[in-house]
Structures are given as structure tokens and as C-alpha cells.
Image 1 (cartoon, protein in one colour):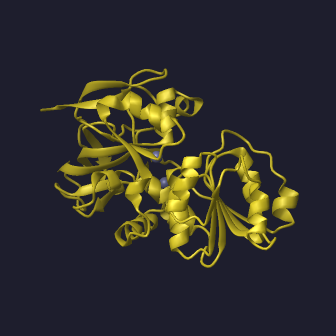
Image 2: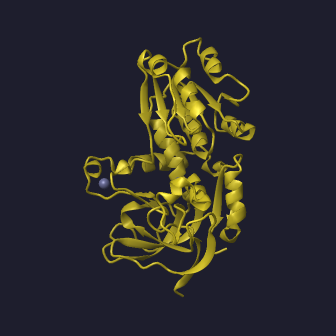
Image 3: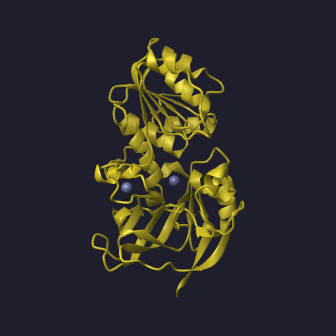
Length: 347
Ligand SMILES: [Zn+2]
Ligand SMILES: [Zn+2]
């Protein structure tokens, strides 16, 4: 058998097609993976909807999808670290391996990075070819559903570790799957008080399950006021912005105390107007941007969080679909109240 079922961005227009494709060819440094589960990311919704973000990056026809868990079924002749039968997830940002950033331990922000399922063929398919350099071996008993979401979980972990949250008061704005992860990890790292906010009541409720002491909708409560009153008027030590809403960025800055830390990783749709004089300069605020996961530091941290049960990663998945029902799956992923949506290729 040399064909497979795959979800293809067939043309430069909204939508996608389930089609029969040739199983991709292995190159010397690649592994062939039978994909057991794949999760839908915001990026995939952009590709499906064919937004300007997707138009600037994706060249159809191409299999998309990048968050996966699968079993290695073949390896190229130069592969040494991964073997047939291994269960893997993957770092989806494929670094070039030789630029200044790659050479100085910053592969995750490589200057010439390729993203799986965006620049190179992805994982919404029964089989996928992955460079060995981004394969991450998992314990054999890892549920495929858990393996498939470790990549987005990693973003939340990377953000949580980006500030010193031990004993701190922390605000997390945005409680999608990544924000929820951040809430749980921040709490497990020893934050004294975690305030979470999301416009979805359901997500605010999930934030409480993940350990938030206070979870509110920013539509109903004045977040800045709440952050101050919960910290004796001081403001929180750390704010982590996970929503990508322009209004939340200003709220995060204004909620943070003088000399506090702000971590930003939610992606805004464009430039954001901020009061830098009042909210950053006079406050001597420390702002840090976060993207992706550090290779491989974040992955080790993720595995420890899964192993220790510090957060129940499975709870981030709210929906599962056979890949043949991708249209409904994408609709659910876009609906706002959902957590992670997982697809099963070949079903
Ligand atoms: Zn993703
Ligand atoms: Zn590089």
C-alpha cells in the first residue's frame, strides 16, 4: 500500500479536501510516522479559512496540520536517534541548524525556521515525514491524544517559566488551551495567587479547575481594579497575556505592579496602542515576548508536568473526531468555547 488519506489545502481559497495521496518519500535524515492523533491549532483554522496569515505562508496544494503523536514506521539511512516502533511527538518549528540563533542555543527562534504543516507538508494524514531533528520520543504508554497536544502545552509551559512566579501574584489573560496550561503550571510552580480571565464563562470555569484562585470575564469585571484590590492596591507581580486581544495587553500592563514582569504570547491581529509612559517606563516594567518552545528545555519541562500530574493535560481536550469529520471539527475549534479538538487520521 503506498497511498493514504490526507487532509489537503488543495487550492488558494477557503476550505480543505480529504483526498487520497501518495505516502510521502523518506529522505536520509527523516522518519516516516503513522499519525495516531493530530490536534487542530489556530494556525490550521487560518489555513482552512485562507486568511492573509495563511496566504502569506502556505503554498497549496499541501497537507496541513502540525500537532501530532505517531509511531515511527520507517527511518532514513542517516537517522540514528529514533527507531522504528518509537512513539513520537514533534517540535513543529524546524530550525535550520546553522544560523547565529541556532548556533547560540536559540533554535526556537531560528532566522530561517520552517513550520510543519505551514511551509512543509504536515500531519493531517495517515502518514507523515518528519525530520529526525524535531522528533521527540514519548513513553510507549502515552495516550495518542496526550501526545498530540504536548506542542501547544509547551507554549503554555514556556510562558509560565518565562517569569519568576514562585510566591508571586499572577494574572493570566486568556484561557484557551494554552492559557489554561499556563494557569496550571504557574500554580504548580508555587504562585501564591492566580487570577485568570476569559470572555467565555466556560473557559473561566475551566481556569478554576486548573487552579486559578479567581477567574472572571473581563466583560463583567474591571480586571485592573480586580488585580489591584486582590493585591492590596499594589498590582500583580506577573501578568501573562495569552488571549491575543488588544484590550488585554493594556489591561495586563496596567494590572502589573511597578518593576513587575509581563509575558506576552497571544498574537494580536495587528499593531496595538499602549500607554508606554505610564504603564511601562515609569513602572520600570519588564516585558518578555514568548513564542514556541525552547529546544529541548521546554519539552523536558512538559514531560515532567505530564509525569507528575501537575496538570491534567487530558482535560484540555474537549472534542475528538475521525478525520473524515474535519469540517465539523474545524467548526467546533472556531466556536470559542472549545478546548483542544483532536482528529484521528484514517478514520
Ligand atoms: Zn499549533
Ligand atoms: Zn537557524
